[in-house]
Image (cartoon, rainbow, N blue to C red):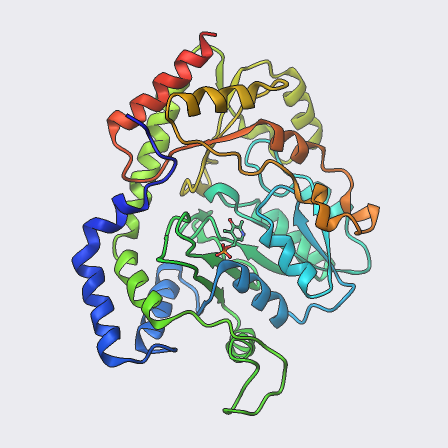
Length: 397
Ligand SMILES: *Cc1c(COP(=O)(O)O)cnc(C)c1O
C-alpha cells in the first residue's frame, strides 16, 4: 500500500460537518472581508500562544513581509537569515530592498548557528530572522542576547512551528514579531493560503494592523504605503474549527516521531543526532567528520516542545540520500527533500555581495543529506511500519 508524504483529506474529511456549518454561517451573514470570524480566530490563536496580538494575514510570506514593513526595514539594511530554510524567509527581506545575510546552521537542530550570525554582524545589520525549522525552536536565549547586544529587531519565522515551545515560551512570541503560515502542509493546515502575524508590542501591532489594509486609517486616508494582507473571513472560520483539534494533531505527530525514533534507532548503522554538538561549530565539524553512520535521526532538545512539521533524516555520503529517496519512492513511500538548494546558492541572490553569501558549509551539507519522511498525524501504524520496513531493506544493501 502506498504511503503518501501528506494526506490532507485524512485530517479534513472527518471534520466535514463542522466545516460545512462554519462555511454556511459565513455564507449567510455575507461579511466576507474582516468579518467576525476573523477576530474570533485571532483571539483564539493569541490565547493559545499566550501573546497580546494576533493579526490574520493572507499567507506566511505576507506575515513576514508585513512584520518587516512594520519594523521599518529600509533599503540597504542587512538582515541575518539562515541559509537553510524555505525561500520566503529571505524573499521578504529582498522585496523591501534590504539585504539578506545568510548564516550557517546547526547540523543537529537545523537552525541558525548563532556564533556564525554574530560573526556576520556589520554596522548595517538591522534585524535577525530565526526560523524554527521543521517544528523545533531555534536557540532563542542566545539569539535574543545577540539581538539585545547589537540593537537588532527579531522577527521569528514560525511558519513550521505554531504551538512549538522553547523553555515553556511559545515560538513566535519571543521576538518583536512572529510569523505563522496556514499553508495546507503546515501543522495547522488551512484550505488555501493563510498566515498570522503575532506580537506583544501594542504599537507595532497597531502599525501592522493599519499596514494590512493599505496603511489606511480612517477609511481612504493613507499615511503609509501598506498593502492588502487580509485573510478571508471564510478561511478564519474554517481554521477556527481545526484549531479546536490542534492539540490532538500535535500529539499524533509527536507519537509518530517517537515511534520512528524507537524503531529506526534499532536498525544497524542508524544513530541519533547528539544535542551536545549544537552551538559549537568546532565540535559540529568534528562530529560531522567522525560520523560514519548511514542514517542520523532527528532529535528534540529537552528544553523544546518539537511539533514535528517534518521528520528529517540525514543520510551522509555522496549520493546516499538520493539512493534512499529513490528506494522509498520505488516502494511507494512519499518523501521529500526540504531543501535541495540553500538560499545563498539561489540564482536570484547571485547579485548579492559576496560577504552575504559566505561560510554556509554546514547548510550546504544539510541540503545534500536531508530527507523528510511522512509524519502527518493520521498516518496509521501499518503505514508507519511500511516506512520503517522500506528503510530497513535499504540499509541491508
Ligand atoms: C511555509 C513557509 C513560509 C511561507 O508561508 P506561506 O504561507 O506558504 O507563504 C515561510 N517560511 C517558512 C520556514 C515556511 O516553511
